[in-house]
Length: 115
Length: 112
Image 1 (cartoon, rainbow over the protein chains, first blue to last red):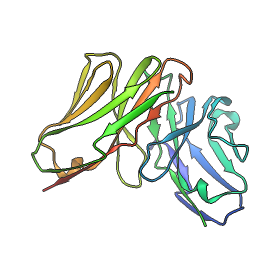
Image 2 (cartoon, each protein chain N blue to C red):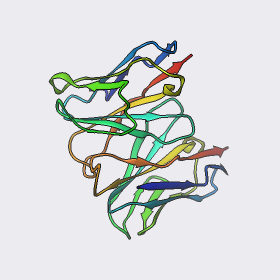
Image 3 (tube, each protein chain N blue to C red):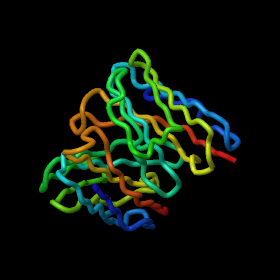
């Protein structure tokens, strides 16, 4: 297993379009997290899955954002009607168990640019 | 609300010049404090977890320490390959016990 995989690595879209990102976690990890990072800032939590159940959502996650993890394997994050403020790096992480005893392994992220 | 403040924002060192990065935190109850390293265009890479005041952990040229209000990442005799952004994050007891609150990071540049 080569770690957490995110696709695409880069996405440029026009304002108002919908985009979808994919995250493939480490195969035995049952917890999956989405974070967003803008330039010069630390990552901000968006949402968390344990297996296929979405257990936590940040208030940052507006109605335009939706995340799924069907069958508890890969996850998708969709942003509808993108806005320029959505431009950021979207990071996915997975873990084998509960924090703090099991740390996150992050993917390399999907960089979204909304023009 | 949980808060993490890192200083300095940026630090430039000569190779071999030791220094420390600071992470001050305010949380409702600390379950763990985490240090990550992030290279440009990459996701954060885990370095350490600290659980309670007085704890120390070491890895190569890095040593992390924890008090009740802050954590330090000491870098001894750094090399150019240590150049990266170092992120500090906290996990609070409640709520959001499965999530991390990150600081903005310290960008470290080590010159040969």
